[in-house]
Image 1 (cartoon, rainbow, N blue to C red):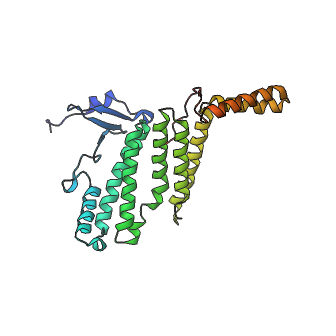
Image 2 (cartoon, rainbow, N blue to C red; image 1 turned 30 degrees about the vertical axis):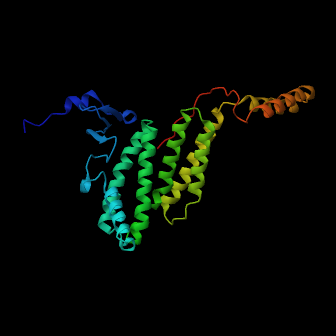
Image 3 (cartoon, helix red, strand yellow; image 1 turned 90 degrees about the vertical axis):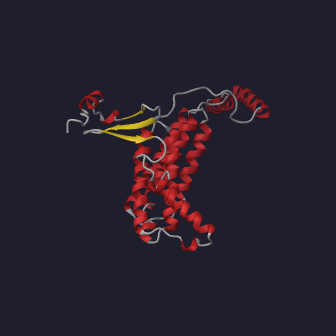
Length: 270
């Protein structure tokens, strides 16, 4: 018993605070790891590969292993005989939960690229199980969470591109994500209904925030001034503004002229 490490000093060096309970640090070998402070201890997850560091069947993940099985079945001309039984589905469900725990924390830390990576990975898991599970209940088990994971993927993708100043591209990503969620087939499940509604509302809210902070181009600013001049019946000034607008439109593509910077939107909750 005396050989075991007492973690009290480590825990005292990082007091538990619900609003500051995740961090990325470098291990002694130089690799990054994700640490989560809980009320009773510290959890550690790998940043890349499977979050718990395991290599089931000698591969990066159980999903990769079963995808390899499918590829072998296709090569042998036996794709129709490939299926996932209940035990294999349970294994994949548990593995998907590990990635969920990681990408929620990565999102919290604004690690957008890794959040996109992990949500895309779990979406592939959803599709794989839905297409190949032997039992119908396993095929549909994950579908109630699809709106949520699509939303997380879309928001992380939009916020990642927004950091480059591409407001319009970020809005396009959010609109595509919203359309993908709206196009999902109906699922008779309370969780699905809740997550679908919550996800669509979150996407609309973020899009509105981006619209509010999106810098206006010279052309958009002039069009705004034109509307104000017409409302005030300043018709001579309005005519001057129309001439300037026509000149800008003839010389430059819309939206490429001198955008001013504004504060960015708040990060939405996971």
